[in-house]
Image (cartoon, rainbow, N blue to C red; front, side):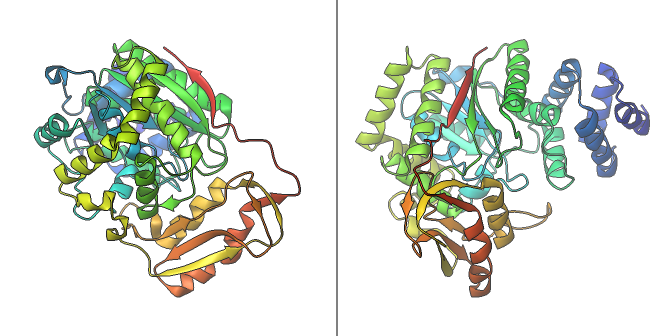
Length: 435
């Protein structure tokens, strides 16, 4: 196998044979193919695409580049959820303990931020002591003890994807349907859950900008899952505006805790319940959506869901007190409120622009080696339909320096559009696609 010939084939729009593609992925996984050649290949895929056969082979090759897990001995249904990423999307954090508290085991392997979107692992690492790096044996132990565990990829779980995931983030090749589908499904198939619910986002703050692109991605991943004997369904959800009233790391953990206590913004709460209900019904832990929703609401009201989150945190080495005392997490010392330039109704918030501000504050990465400032972000963000008077805050910026806090005030004011009449209600869930 000559790597540059594979790259040239894809550059010219030709289909790569299964064995060639497997050998190419294997070489990258083993360190025999340098990053610069994989970056060139990823860019070729970005522009030329892949056939379903190529995507399936690439997914399988990345899955088989390491070990796979088996949860059949747990004695309960297993399910996971994956989001394609969006601004303010903290759903996985309350979702895992909520579903687990209702009888479904949730072994969740998540990722770090890609581009301007925050990563579940980065958010969880806002919790003092929380380790996202567990061995497969420790992962199983936490799952048996608490019913849920959220970790990052281990070195031997889809290692080819782990390398490519980080490379895509800094080479401008994130929003590619073949690369997204193979990345997500290689991890999830290696993870070994019996069922998977996908939250495929579309809009300004998502990698898929249109509803049609999101549906294409969802159908591709569902087809991959079906070909490998897994139950997969997808919700297509709106990401033209951020989810919830917080964007960042610590602030999104705080909002997730409020959801588990039966509080928090309606959009985050409702989407969490819908995805959790889909997980319970798809896995067989609940007989119907109505039964699932009832069980989930009772778990929140009784405190069982929040307690499950605290036990999961403790099992990961983190401080479980944050579930009742979020102030124990790191937080930027300086804040600045962003005043509304006029009175009116909030017509919308530019999710893409909001994500860029948080990244520039230090809440995201510009290159692979960057560290995250967990304490910075945006909170108290207005939402569509809210009535606001001139001078009232549209949001609060949290920064590590006074200069940063003030620097983004004018830019932040521009991401909120205002109108004179109440706008149409936002529809979060746009479609449901079943296997």
